[in-house]
Amino acid sequence: MACPSVDKNLLPMKAHYFLFNAGSAPIVPFLPVYARQLGFSSFVVGNTYAVLPIFGMLSKPLFGAISDYFKQQKFLFLLFQLLSAIALFTIQFLPEVPTKSPVEFHCHQESFLVMCNNVDPAAIDRVEKASLQNGTVLCKVQCEIGNNSSFYEDLCSDWHVNNGYCKNPEALPAGSPTIPVGSKILEMTAELPMVHYVRQGNCSFFKVHNAILPNAKPLNPYCDVTLQKLQCNAVCDNSAVMDLITRPADDNYSPALSYQFWLFFLLLIVAWSSMAVVGSVGDAICFGMLGDKPNHYGQQRLWGAVGWGLFTLIAGVLVDELSKDKFKKDYTIAFYIVVINVLLSIVVSYQLKYSQTHISRNILRDVGLMFSEARILIFIAWCIIVGINTGMLWQFLFWHLEDLAGVDTKWIKALQGLAAGVQCFGGELPFFFLSGWIIKRLGHIHVMTLVLLSFGVRFILYSVLTNPWMCLPIELLQGVTFGLFYSTMASYASILSVPGTEATVQGLVGAVFEGVGVSLGSFIGGVVFYAYSGAVMFGIFGGLSIVLAILHAVIQHYLSKQPTSPSRDKGFKTVRYAPPNEANETCDDQQILTAT
Image (tube, rainbow, N blue to C red; front, side, top):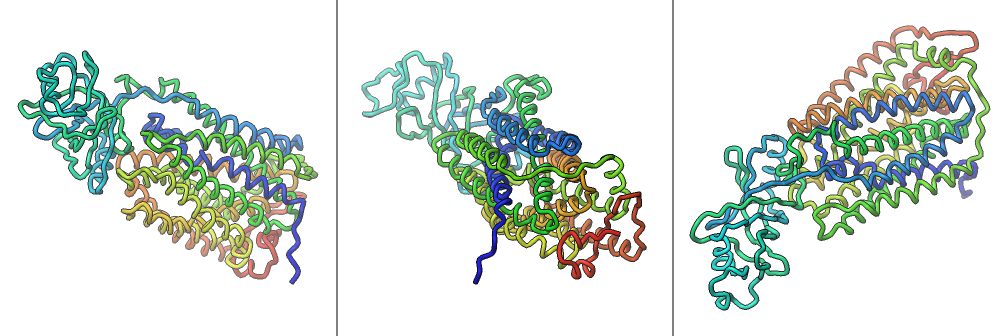
């Protein structure tokens, strides 16, 4: 059997998709949870990601038109890859928002860390869910003893801690821990079994099972005679607990007045806009190199799925491994992987043997005519709806998994990386490869309905999850909701394009997907997630997606019965949808969308 031939001219394109996605994967999917670690709330993150796609919406058609007009697709392609790497790498140097985590330490027959006056219903709900699991949270606690002489006595008599105030230090057991004489601060690591968490009124009580002083063994913290109350600050290894107890150090804090937020926002704008331009111009270059074989696009783009899935998994495992014994995740290795892979992508992209041969004399006129068809407007609406769902998925799936994990977060980055790996290798890769065949058999209309229906099923399954590991089989639906969707969107946009407008049209279609759809999804998702929970958010929009899938099928069935009235203009070939029966008669995607 003869081996299938490989077009060597397309190898740099495949390598770009692999390396650029391998460069984005180690940090981009983790940015929302990294923002949480920097001190930003889900509401702030949701609003931020609602605005970011607007910059992508503006940059895609703007720089797409510039690259078309000046025939500089390859130059801008290389430039924006470099800008994306610089922006993403710089994020690691941003300072965290100054925060405090005030708690009271109540010591009596039993000891508790107590936090009052938190009215965030979502944070309370996440902690209560975590309390249903059999796990233990570790908190590093610093308490102000001050001149509380009775507590010093309790440290001696009940805790057996030598602190310089003991009346009979020689009576303490051998090996008793010691704190410096005159120290007015008690430092300890508190073990909090979440099964003993109690909510009373406006206060949360976390029972302290053991207290571990520096360089000492665990001890039972109790005060036999009187109830002692100390003001403390705590840092815990659980995100749900930290969300509950953390607040800005400045009581008048506002993200709008925080330089940390604006630096983070600025770098995200540069990174997001750059990646948007790389995506749209790169796809235009790819379709230009494919020529009359646009149905082979999926076979190029699938290498992006390989790079994304592989390096999301690698980064997740490495971050977990290098964050052992740390109360916060250390993403340093992920940022360095970003730089290495994107620089390699620039090197291989420079080897592309591609030159732009067509130029449109009137880009605005040619593009405008393409958007005068009712069916094409429905295609744009479909891109927006899918974008809304995608925005929620990108920004809040990992948050939802962390909330489901509760107190057991030591493996969470590995799970998130594994989920991304399943998305790419089990979902995107086979569907990118088969996308041309599927679109030919089903037709674009039915594929669009299938994508909406798959989103509905996927979101509803997320809403009923109780074990975060059970998300893994659900991630197989990524093949339809992104792999098949993206191939449909990109191939249709390419075939719509008048020669010389390729990057412009790719930019416009990508702009409505991200700039309108993903933006709305991020904003709405942030509001619902903050007010309720991830389960509620996914449940609501899963149901809506199924309703919209049915509505889309009904509308398209009605339009298929109507005569086609394509826009016409001198020298302009309009394009229309091909229903499934027409698609079955064609050889490739160029014929699926027939010229009239």
